[in-house]
Image 1: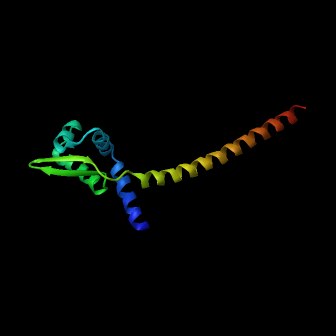
Image 2: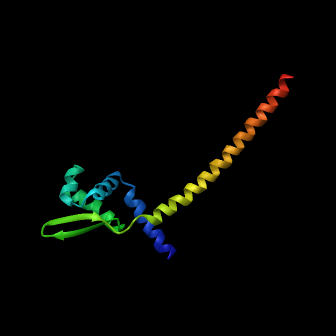
Image 3: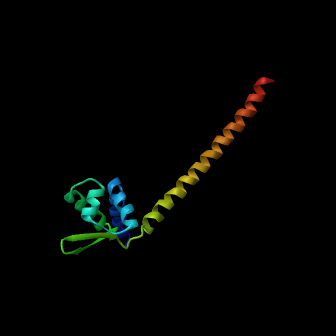
Length: 121
């Protein structure tokens, strides 16, 4: 189970690492689109767009249906809940570390103020 979840995360983050693929997801969030429409919007060849859509499909983020010569893309069933949970765990970790760092900085500032007063006397 853990190995499968890790593969899902890897595929999702790999798919999301590209700005064009993130743009495709944003566009499909508004409405379904054909490969041709997406290629025109992103100023690329059909072959290039098919490759991007394929990566998104493998990650489960996009599905395609072919009707005649037109392949229509729509958002997939994955809702990125696992990815959001993974990010949240690390956000909490870093927030706790920054809170600890803030405490250290405040303690150093207090010491500096006390030491500064002693030197003036």
